[in-house]
Image (cartoon, one colour):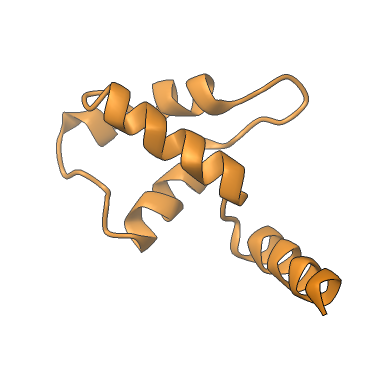
Length: 76
């Protein structure tokens, strides 16, 4: 049962273009630490070698959770 849930969650994240749970936590941590950070800077901060996180993915994630600021910090 657990493995099926894990598989479903992984597939849903890939299709929806959302970050994994650990990536989402890192995104939120960086936003708390640096509230004025821009999307491009945020993507650079949370990306790791071999696993790049696209700015569009972060934008979708923040918009989905109604966390996208309507300020200059979210400009491209």
